[in-house]
Structures are given as C-alpha cells and as structure tokens.
Length: 128
Length: 360
Image (cartoon, rainbow over all chains, first blue to last red; front, side, top):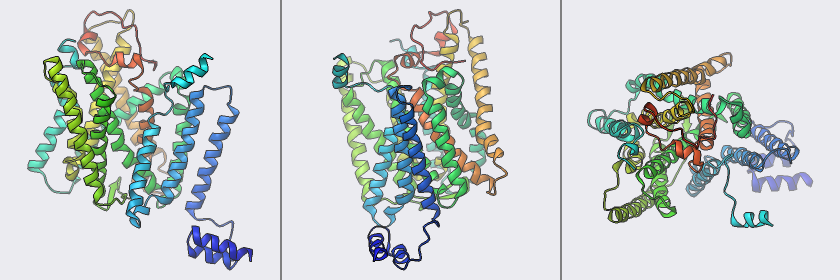
C-alpha cells in the first residue's frame, strides 16, 4: 500500500515511468541518474556554503555572509537550470520564465561581494 | 571639462576602440561577406584572441590576485568562487553530455548580459566625463534599451536551433516568437525616452551631446540586433568587447602605477608600463586558455571539449571578478576613470583618491 501511494505521488510530480518502478517495488534507491547525482552534489555544495556562513559568524564581515548566501542562490539556480532549462521546448511560456529567471540571477550576481548602500531603516537602526 | 579629458586617449583612438571599428567591420562584412561559414574567420579570430581576448580575462585575474590585500578584501570572489567553478567544471567533465551543455548554455547566455553591463558602464563613464547628468530616469531608459537589445540578440542567436562552441553542440533556449516583438518594443521605448532626455540636456546646455556618450549603446545595438543575423560577425564580437575593456583597464593600470608619489610622468614610462602590463596579460591569457586545458589533457575527453568547458568557467569567473573590481560607485575607481593618458605623460599632481584594488 505504501509503495502504491509513493508511486501515485511520483506519477503526479516526476512522471509515470519512475512511478511505475516504485509501485512495483523495482526501484533501486542507490542507483541514481547523472542528473540526480549532480543535484545531490549541488545540495551538498549549498549545505557547505550555509555551514561556512554559520561557522564564520562573528569572524567575517556581513558582506562575506551575503556573498556566501549568493553562492547558494547561484548553485541552486544552476541546479534548477539543469533540471528545467529546456522545458520551453514543451511549454513556450516556461522558456520565457527560464530566461527571465536567468536575467534575475545575472542581475543578482552583479552585486556579488560589493558594498551595498544601507537603506534609511538600516541607518536608523544603527543610529539607535 | 576640457575637450581633451572627454577621452581616455583622443577622439580617434576612443571612437575606434569603443565601437567605431566594430561598426566598420560589421558594414564591411555586410557588404562583402554573407556566407554562414565562419572557418575563414576562425583562425583570424584565434590570433586576435591571443593578443586581445585572452589578455582581457587575464587583466581581470591579474588585477584581483596580484595583491594579498585584494584577496583579503574579496575572499569569496577570490577563493570561494574558484572552488564552485572547479565543482562545475568537474561535473561537466564527469558528464559532458548531461551537465556540460547546461554549463556552456549558462555561459553563452551570461556573456551577452555581461557585455550589456559593460555598455552601460562605458556610457556612464563618458557621460560623467562630459558632464552629462545620468540620473535614475536616464539610467532606466538606457538600461531598457541595452538589456532589451541583449534579449533581441539572444533570440536571434538561438534561432539556429543549436550553437557550436569549441566543437560542442550547445542546445538553445526555446523562446516563443512574440518575445522578439516585445523586446523590440521595450528597446525602442528606452531609446526614445533616452533620446528625449538627451534633447532636453542639449537645450539646457546649449550644446550637442558628445557622440562618444552614445557610441557604446549604438555599438551594442549593432552587435545584438542587426549584427546578430550575420554569423561571421558573431565570431569577432568578443574581440571588440575585449578591446573596449583593455582600453579602460590599461588607463587604470597606468594611473595606479604612474600617478604615485615620486612616479615618473613621461611617455617613456607610459610605454614601458603598458608593455609590461600587456606582456604579462598576454602570457596570463595563454596560461588560462591554452595552459590550463593542456593540464587536463590526460582526461578521456577530446581536448576541445576540455578547453571549451574551462573557457566557460574562466568566463563566468571573469563576470564575477569584473563586477567586484569595476564598481563605479567606488569613488576612487571613478576618479581613476576620469584620467586622460596625456596627464600621465606630463607633470601632474598625485590624485588623492586611489582605487581600492591594490596593485603590485
């Protein structure tokens, strides 16, 4: 029963071919496709960046923490791009969203590790 | 503001390097060379790459890594980012048919965006030198024009179905047909609004806008809108982008090396420093684009595949480093970007504001 439910969930989210494998109990949890392994490596790299930011708390500047957070965005963005980069071939509108997402990513990365002007609220807080 | 200080070198040199030369080449190709076969240009472009494109990347790397102070100032860019790039390169080597196409696709989309940033930066520099006020509205209009031209270019580049890069076939980003019209609408709106601001400025100042202010944007338009339909022109666009970069980077290098207390202000010193910087960057460029792939020749991959993946990584790293070291908001950097090369060749006072990036 649990396998059947997992199969139904996968059918909804990941495609019926893989769902059929799980439902019949033939899926090997150790075997992963290259994309899945890449995704796992990407998640690992994001964890490493987050952990670095945590362990460096109080020892590096706020700018460095922001840069580490932006690395997480970069890695996550690239992983999503590998997964969905060509989805526009099936859904043209999704291709537009991919391009806009990439432009947003490039724009954000353009602010990488630079001094950012603090807003009036931040200045007010620091004055207090 | 004197007429001389509007330019980094002089009218001829600045006009040719910032865009005049590329527009002349585009017109020449349009008139005399239509075939899509770019093999004739490949070797020509490769030779130009050795002396212009590759050194342009090296100049950025050199500027960041030449001093430990710079590395301390930008630790994530200098140390963290190369690790991430090595990870992406490793993944691409491991799965050249699954991951590498996306890595190359990312680079090929990021590259024209990066060119757009340089176009805006150059326009801001020349506008500042000419006393042309670039407020938020002017900048928004200019950005609308420049970034929409980039989108138009991406759409045109992608129409072929797939792109060749170092012999690898890179998939294109599928986009709907209406997007070209939408991008063109935004682009022309930005152009008209910016032209309106320029006309208002002309009336207020009772003089014409110096053409050099508009040249980077016009050049960008030629590269990405009409030029994007000419395959033979694509091959040389990176050369012209690099040429623009090297002009500014050279003047910055000369400023920080010569305009120091006790620094000798003479043409001899300018020439010597330019040769020293140029030769180092040519060597550095060769190391990045020839030496680095050669170090991975033992991999069970074609050398061109290895070279292409590494070239994409060097490019993406360059996009980050460039963003860090050339921010015009940094008062010291913008002060160096107001220099004219003749000021460094004759007696002059030492500028108080110096770039934050330390030179060796």
